[in-house]
Length: 146
Image 1 (spheres, helix red, strand yellow):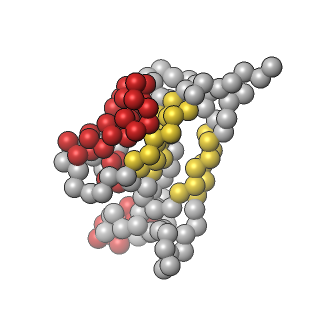
Image 2: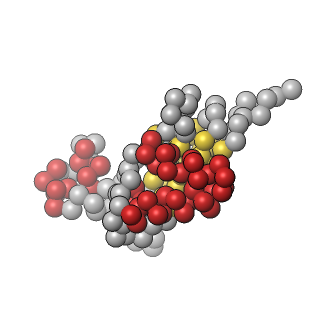
């Protein structure tokens, strides 16, 4: 069968699975943000407190952070791409299908750098006012076992 993708994360950086429309494994967000807004939605933080700073990060890496990472695993059955990005991209283009529509056409002829450049350009064109960090990892068809 194909390979397994495992992603660990802390904070509001995101991982997405990008696939063509109608793929067996559809394009989707793989991670959940560690923010005050997300904590309020999960019932672990008072919504009134979260409303004061909805984008406040509740987990982070660093000397003063108590980073308990979350982990997700995906076993794609078809080709696609794994997208890792910061909020400089997803605040302007949060939908997985929209991200796939920008990245995958550029991935085919130009590889991962072209897909990352296309996503960065889309964030900037949408008014990007934050740092944009993007990594695209192409995932080929699974290999058949003999």
